[in-house]
Length: 458
Image (cartoon, rainbow, N blue to C red; front, side, top):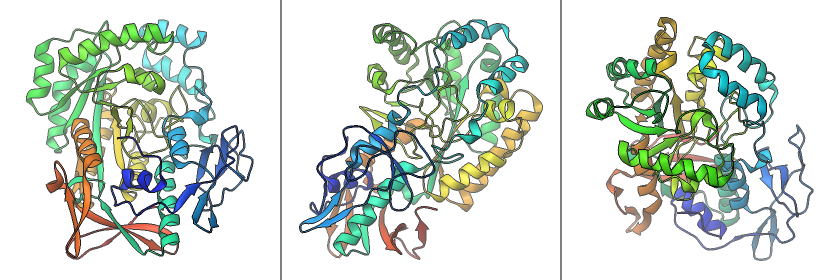
């Protein structure tokens, strides 16, 4: 499921398009150290590069990496697989960019159960000060990974003199983009509100998943889990005990905890996992025995662990599908920014849906019990319900997204008469689309009656 070594195979894995042979190769002499650089369209990249010296720090002016034409094709001055992996796995942060497991934070989590939200939010605002000045990833929506794919596809098409390339559309049934609602249940009060929350969601036709903490926080009776499943919602595992320490020790200590987490996954019949507070070490995640993970934010400016995967699309992280968190969490919106409107959410949904990506939400039952927050959430649900109709969004459970992304990764586009046919499991749900080159930029259109152009990037 991971991209192949050749550039055309790399593009084919993302777009599910035919391979046209190797015309782009990675140049020799890549720099020994990875760093920041930009592409010709200004897209920020991070990795080893030839011909220029990458910057150790993200800055407003970065050296530009240029593809060079050779006698046999195009020499690319960086390895796109390496660069995109660096972004998705947040290697550009140099590790954990803010110390989420230092002494101060360990003390915070020790005292957290004794602190009301009114106290916690002031401490967190102080800890997160200056977030709006972070230059990268780009707030409030970052799609650097997708922009690199589009830049590379444009280079390939220009080199071959192609105006369009067929591929398998990103979402089933030709949906323009995807939206996914999830709920992390932190306390017994939040747990007890879940039944009412499901009724609220159902009133707007938006099913969701509930991430449940298996130890210490509250009891998790089977009747509670079955009530979620019975109503067509989804159960996933949320950390072990939400103490903020899952990744703070050694890998051996992590593995010991994960053995219990995996056991709870089987007990709860859960296919997905999310860590507490979105803490993460992607190199360790392979120990998790789940189909998909939801612990990596796209832009983590307002999270204790800064960084972000710079993507609004699912991607494979080993054998797991990563379903990134691509919108601001309700707690951050209400209690860090003090904003009880849906303006930021709507701005993010608009940017993501224009890019045909995934708008995924975390809304905690614990923080929308209060009437003002609940009204804001209902305004969001009404907005999403309307966008499902006007913009043809796919409102999906994370398990459905996982199943689709896995199925799509095994589909093939084959020539059939004068057109193209999609083969593979669930291919009847897939749609043929075309990447077109206009003024040096890639745009997309679906193969359908009254085809309309879908802009790829803004």
